[in-house]
Length: 322
Ligand code: AVI
Image (cartoon, rainbow, N blue to C red; front, side, top):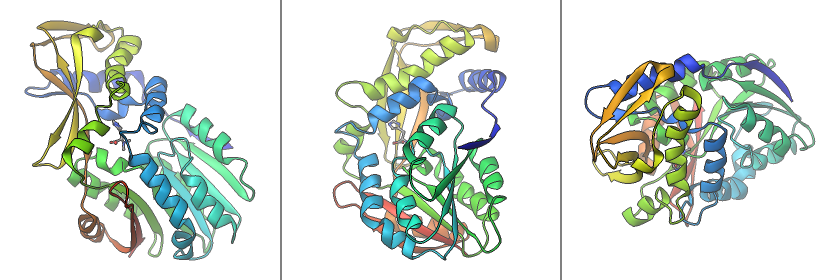
C-alpha cells in the first residue's frame, strides 16, 4: 500500500484540547476522537464483537447482503474512498462486488497508522484492488483522494459504522455538506447510520456486562496519564452510559467517585473534580430512517436507496450528489 502523507494529532493539539475541555465552565468534556489511540482502537474492535453491541454486525450484514445491489446503482468506473477505514473488514464486500466489473483503487483515510496497516493486510489481497492510504483527517484525506481520480471516474465515499452518530446532529449535517463540496454531481456517499431502538438494548450496547466499553472509556484518562504525564487515579472514576431522550443520543461519561484534583503537567494545569461530577467523553446519536433522507437532501444529496437491518435497527443509505 502506498501511504501518501503522515499527519497525526500532535501532542500540543492533544494537550490544548484536554485543557480546554477540562477547564471549560459547566460540564467538563474530552473530545471523543482521542478515545482511539492504539489501546482504544483495539478495545473498540472487541466492542464490535460483543453480544450487546449489534451495530457493527448489522452494518456488515447489510453490506454482505446488498453489496451487489449497491454497486449496480453506481455509475461505472468508480474510485473508492473510505472515511475512517478502521480495519476495512466491512469494505471487502463492496470492493469484491466492484472488482467484478472494474479494477478498483481504494483510498482508506485514517488518522491511525495501525488501523491503516490492518486495513492493508485485510484488503490488500483482493485481486484487482490497489490501495492508496491517506494518514490524515477525513476532509483533508478526501480532498487528496479525490485528486487521484482519473477523467470520467466517479467517487464513491464510504462512511460506515455510524461514525456520523458521533457528531452532534447539526455538525453531522454540516459534515455531509462539506463532503458534498468535494464531490461532483453523480458521485455517491454510502452512509451507515444506527437507528433508534428500545432503551434497554441501547444502554446495554454502551455498558456491556464484561466492562469492555468501560475500559474503552477509562482508557482516555489512561492515555492522558501516558502521553501528558497526568495523575488520574482510574479507580476514582466510573464509566456511565446514559440516554438523552431530548437529543436522541447515548452519552458516555466518566463519573468522579470523590472530590479530587488532577495535575496534567504537559498541558500545564491542575483541575478539580467534585464527587459525582462527570467528564463527558462521547455522544452517539440515533437516527430515524426518514430523518436521514431529509438531512441528506439539505446537504445536497438525493437518497437513492436505503437498506434496513431487521435484527438490529440500522440503515445503509446510498446518497447521490446532486
Ligand atoms: C465508532 N462509533 C460509531 C461507536 C458508537 O457506537 O458510537 C463508538 C463506540 N463508543 C462506545 N461504543 C462504541
